[in-house]
Amino acid sequence: MYAQMVKSEGKRPGEALSPEEQAFQDRIDAGERIEPRDWMPEGYRKTLIRQIGQHAHSEIVGQLPEGNWITRAPTLERKAILLAKVQDEAGHGLYLYSAAETLGESRDEMTQKLLDGRMKYSSIFNYPTLTWADIGAIGWLVDGAAIMNQVPLQRTSYGPYARAMVRICKEESFHQRQGYHIMMKMARGTDAQREMAQDALNRFWYPSLMMFGPSDKESVHSAQNMAWKIKINTNDELRQKFVDQTVPQAEFLGLTVPDETLCWNEEKGGYDFAEPDWNEFFEVLKGNGPCNAERIGARQKAWDDGAWFRDGLSAYADKQQARRMAAE
Ligand code: FAQ
Image 1 (tube, rainbow, N blue to C red):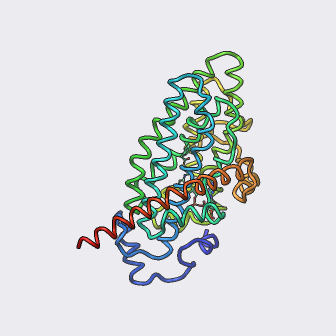
Image 2: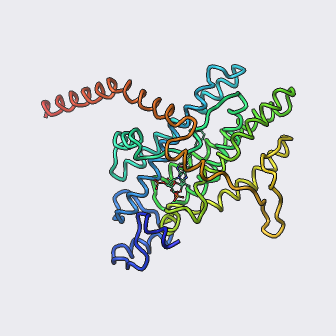
Image 3: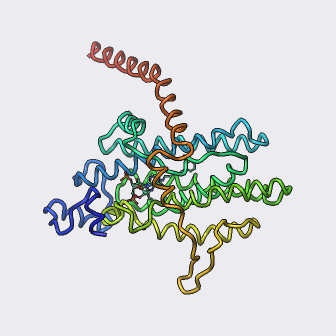
């Protein structure tokens, strides 16, 4: 654990805290919220920009796999629901960029870092959505995993991030329910629909487990981030809770979790389950997942296509400012 902290933004093992850092840590330990104008260690600021920025990018890139199905939703009602969900994700991205901007990095800078590979987004959005059942599986599993991770983040130490999480979690609950509802329809439908639902579960199960990050022994940021209450639970704790919550939901659907080793462990009060393929996870992080190039290509195109609009807004703002100054 200590060796891992060296790579993180915090102190090296054994390094003493300055009086300012100690006072800051005391505030965190007392459960106080840190606000944008408060003094904070540079490492705290940087790691929050990294996490909130990556979270914002995930919400925005996360619109792409589902957006792919808006024109092909099977009914008008499903189309309206999916459209609303995808719009919610855009809103989440915007709250989160705003929260990160309070730490001194602009949305333009974060976007540039995403496009040139210096910032990440969640690995899950590098997998394709091949059938309508995938939209059910995303709502059920991906939003389900997102909620599991984000409910504790409502208690995170940085005020703007914690407050953004409250609304995001409410909306994610609706997303999860709509996904599960699609799965119920498919699982109780024709044989072909049931097979499609099972196939979606087979393909999204392990990538969903990867959303919680590498195992605790591989997680470089967990120790420092938990001390700063940027992170409330470890990656493995949340993964376990997700499996325990989701397996009975799969049973209710009559679907099979694609893990032959899965079994209830009475002693620990949770399921034993197979780890995802961590080589695949690290390859996806390096940019070698099935859809990485497509996703970044789509973001780059949107950024380039929007340049005229950003320029127009800036020119308008400059003109307004010049008028105000002339009138003073
Ligand atoms: N994907 O030391 P740790 C959503 C990176 S929102 C990509 O454990 P940490 C809504 C990590 O950044 C989903 N990279 O890191 C939605 C670090 O690399 P770095 C997004 C990952 O930060 C639903 C390295 O691995 N949610 O889905 C991943 O302590 C449906 C070492 O890892 C959030 O962002 C990954 N899965 O813990 C939208 C929640 N895991 O930066 C549309 C907030 C790890 O040093 C449709 N974030 N990495 O180069 C967090 O809670 C944390 O950042 C973790 C990672 C738990 C993701």
